[in-house]
Image (cartoon, rainbow, N blue to C red; front, top):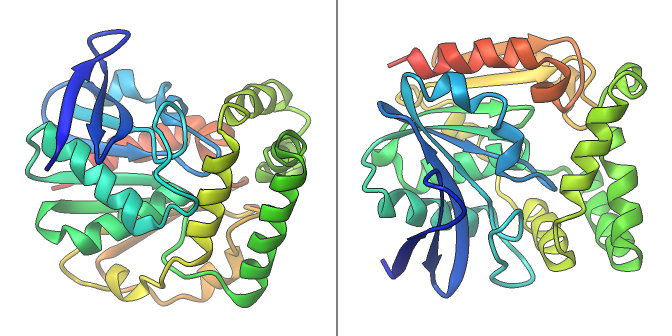
Length: 272
């Protein structure tokens, strides 16, 4: 491991340099380690509302994934496996031996890639508005279209993309949250946006990992999530190691259903 740890901004904010790449993270509280991974166009700040309560009984680590927040890019495609490797570098720098992972959307893809690569370090996984399935041909084509749209005008792409993550019924009442989320998303550099889209396109199917009886998995999905396919979710016959939880709204459950997600996270953190 070739990393260098140093503190920035406050006692709870830190970075490491791993393979000449800066990775930013927060580390709060004591207890069992809970790692929170954000989604595409997000950063570690998406978890801010949940950290104070969770960190009362757990050690909570949030990480800016490659090309997002204050973490740097490594190239023009960030695979889920590469992101997982960089998450591992952060956790090793903190000398953690066992962790539970929560991933929102793309963060869920990374969580599963981590669990596959480092099973001895993974206690359990939560997929928040995420899936273990790979992109179908139509979604892969849409990823290619998204890359072209970002290359044409990154800001316009982001300003259109963020509102569409909320359920249609919530877009008016969550205007302030949409504006704030868009503002954070606009901090994501062009290279980071494109590298993540390409990485999500080529990710592998990990349903077999979810069905592994030795890995406890919690899946949380919105009934009106415009990104995840709720009907497909309902058709899946999950194995006993999987807990499935439904929420009534869209892809941004941490905003649209904040209280419910807070309770789900608290319960997940308790599970052995």
